[in-house]
View 1 (tube, rainbow, N blue to C red):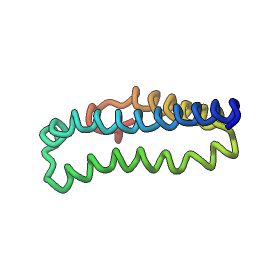
View 2: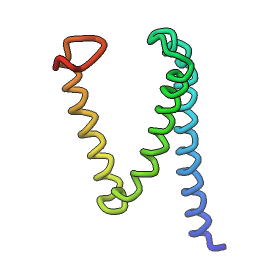
View 3: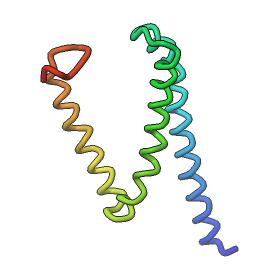
Amino acid sequence: MKKNSLRTVFIWSLIVALGGFLFGFDTAVISGVEKQIQELFSLSSFMHGFTIASALIGTVTGALIAGRPADRFGSRGNIGFGNFIAYYSDIIRSFKRSNWNCQDV
């Protein structure tokens, strides 16, 4: 193997490992608060499982969907769009009057 291809394999391995670490981190965060979520919202067993699974399904779905826009617009464009959405959703949430819902914005 050429030295350049070994470097490429090493870099891709680091990127994949980081992705796995971040997915594991999401799983650990959810696992750490899942009992509190069930108690706080008085969830049935089914709704509790659905709520926890929704967070993990959202993580996987986001990873699967992000590939095409990244190919078309580049990773910087993708990250910039995500930052734009997060920034403006935070502004909208800052104007809500209730702690439990955003219906009265």
